[in-house]
Amino acid sequence: MRWLPVLILPLLPAPAVAETAPQAPPRSGAEARRAELDRAFEALRAAPDEGGAALVEARIRALWAQAASPAVTLLLRRGLRNMEAGLPDEALEDFDAALTLDPRFPEAWYMRAQAHARIGDGTAAARDLQEALRLEPRHWPALAGLSALQEQSGDAAGALRSLEAALAINPRMPGGAERLRVLRRKAEGDPT
Image 1: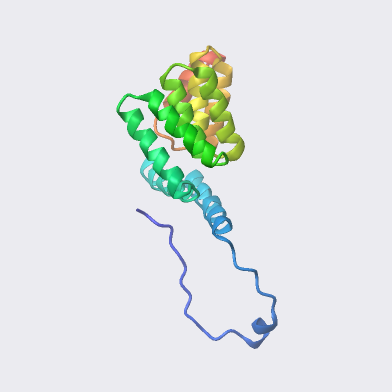
Image 2: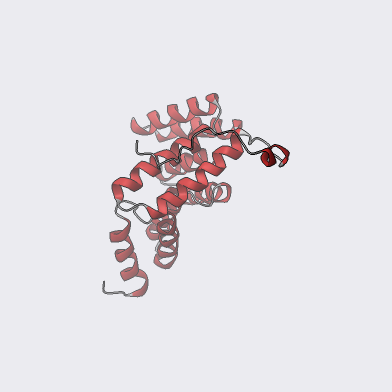
């Protein structure tokens, strides 16, 4: 994984004035994770190419995953295995259980939305994506999923807005530029 460069300063004795300066309180795990997420999202917007963006995306997803309890993580993994096995109804049960344990975990809403979409319930999928976005407004995969659902329902303008919002967060999203051109043609008649 590519890490952003870190400036390492030599450990020098602090000046006497620093001893009397107020110290910032130590950050909790959640606060530190939020600060790192903020930095990662800035790096995602500034990524020079899809490869660099993919590395930052992986870090963001890892930080999101750290917020889940072990029980929620286990349920989400089981749900993903069920999705991969073509068992979206069983996956829904796993994702429902995860959300019962932690209804404030955006990734669980996102995963449940995928299961709803797989069984053809676009309305439930859209509701879950909106909840994921309420909890984490920078969840670009939820925005991209919402865009796809809007396009399927014939709302090209809404699909375009959602995709533009996703690309504002992750400009190097794989396939994003091409999909943007297609949606612009559908929504605005843009020939490009």
